[in-house]
Length: 153
Image (tube, rainbow, N blue to C red; front, side, top):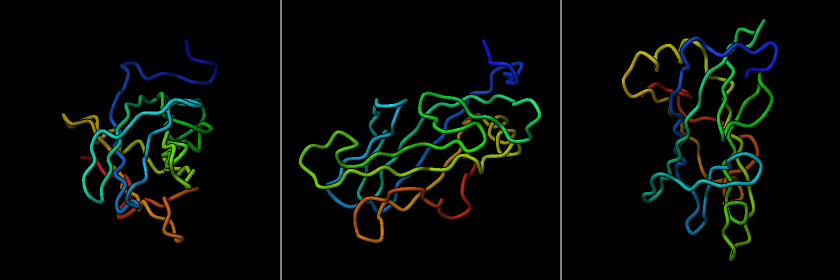
């Protein structure tokens, strides 16, 4: 049952978010944070590239123009949603000095993007981030999306 002020769309709009981490430091484990403390591993890894996916659904917030994204991996307040990508200790790796968390912004996702992704059979929005911080360790804190940000795929 939705909370007051939140209207779930007539037919639930589900789609996939894919985040690709480019150029992460070698030997560091990464995981998508689920809720407060659960972790989900990547769906694919290749040299210099780690890929995560998660399912989200959309709700309309009363009096708000931006979509409200909901899902097990979605974090933050309704108008500033994000995903956490944990690395090192925070991703379950024991023998490492790294313990970081990158915040991947979702507030750039618009109704136009959602309409586009819902009209495609793939139902996928993708963003890429650079996986390395200035100190050479894993990306952390709020990260910028590379290229044009979230893209319909």
